[in-house]
Length: 287
Length: 287
Image: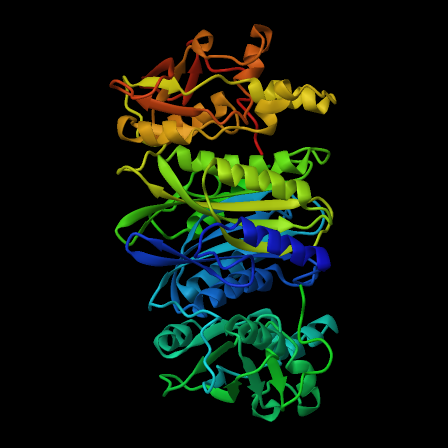
C-alpha cells in the first residue's frame, strides 16, 4: 500500500533515536545497562497474516516464532515477550500454542494487554533480546565480494499454506507454515562471522533486495543454488514466498554452522540480481 | 468479562519469570545489564478505549500518555516506544499527535509494525523505561499506618469524555480526556519515598482496591478528601472513573512533591473502604 510506506517514512522521521531501525523493517537496538537490548514488534491480523480458520495454537506459535526470528537475525538471546491479545471467547487453543512456543524458545511472558473482541482478531507481540555480539548484525554491512548464504530451504511454508488453504489434513505437509522455526542458535553462532544478516519473512528476493539496498550493493543470486522445500516446478514462487524465516546473510570467511551459499555480493545499482538479471514480477510479499 | 480474567490468570501462570507482574495490571520489571528495565504495553480498540469519532491526534496522544503513565508509576524514565498501528488511509492527524506526545515526553519511537485496516482500529504501544530507584515501586508494599495520597484531582477526564460524547467544541473542557498527562516527574521524585504506587487508570476506588489487595491491607479512604476536577454532585462518579492517570501511592514520611492525602492504610480484609464502609456499586471501569 502506497499510504503505508509514506506512513512508515513519516514514522521513521519521528524516530529520533539514532539506533532506530524504522518500523517493521528491522529490529531496534538500544544500549541499556551496559548491554545492547534488541527490540521487535509484530502485529498480525486475521485474514491478512493468518487464516481465520487456522488452529489458534498455530497462530500463537507463529506470533512468537516470527518475533524470535527477528531476534535471531540480530544474534540476540530472547529475554522476554509482551503480548497484545484480542479476546475471542475461547482462548484455550491459543494458550496452548503460546505455552508451547514460549517453552520451546525458553522465553518468559513478561506482560501485555488483553482487549475485547471486535471484528478480525488483531494480535501483537513485542520481543526483547540481549545482543550476544557487537556490532549487532544489521542489513547495511554487506561488502562486495562477500558470499551470500541462506540457513536452509525456502518454499516449505508456501507448500504448507497452500495445503492448509485447500483443507489438507496432512500435518507434516502443513507444519512448515503452521509452526515456523526461528533459527536462534544459528543466528547467535553466526553473529560474529557475518557482515550483514536478516531473516527472510517476506520472500527471498524481496528481502535480499532490502539487504542489498541497505548495504548499497548488488545481491547477485544463483537461482539454482537456493535450497528448496518445494517441487522444482515451484522454484520461482518459492523465491518470492515468505514465512520460512531462514536467515539470509553475507560473510567472507569460514562459518561456524552449515549454510547454503546462494550468491555473491557485487558492486552495482540493482539491489538484487537473479542469474545476472533483474528478477521478473513481484519480489515477494508486500504486507 | 469472566473469560478475560481466566485468560489473564492462565497467562500469568505462563509468565515464568518471577519479575512478571501479570498482564495489564502492572508494568513488568526486568533486570538487564546492570539496570532495571520497566516494560508496559497497552492496546486500545476504537469504540472500546476511544471514540471512533475522536481526533486521531488525541488518540495518539492518549496511547503514548497512558503507557508513559505506567512508567511514571514505577519511577521509570522512558527510553523508547514501539508502535503497533493499523492503517486507516489517512494517518496525518495520528502522526501529528504522536509527534506531539513523543516530543512532550522526550521519548524516541524505536520501531513497531503497521498493518492493514480491518474493522475497528486496534492500536498498541509498548513503552520501555529505566528504573530510577530500587526497589521499583510496586502495588504490594503498602504498610498499615501509611498515608494514602493522590497526585491530583480526579473527574476531569470524566467531564471531558461526557462533553466530547455530547459533541462539545469546548476544547478546555474536553482537554483532560483528550490529552491526559502522565505524571512522570512526580513519579520519579516520589519513587524513593513511597511504599506502594500505581497510576489510576480504571477508577480511584477500583485501583485503590487493587493496591489494597496486592498489599494485603485496607485502603481506608476519606471521600471528601479526594480532590475533584468535577462538580461536587459528581463526586461518587468521579471516584469510579478512570482516565485521569493521577498517581495513587502510600507513604509514611515527608514527600518531595505536593500531593493530596486521601486516607490511611489500615489492617483488614476489605481492600478498600470509603468513609469506613465498603463502597457501593461498581468500583471503576472494568475493561
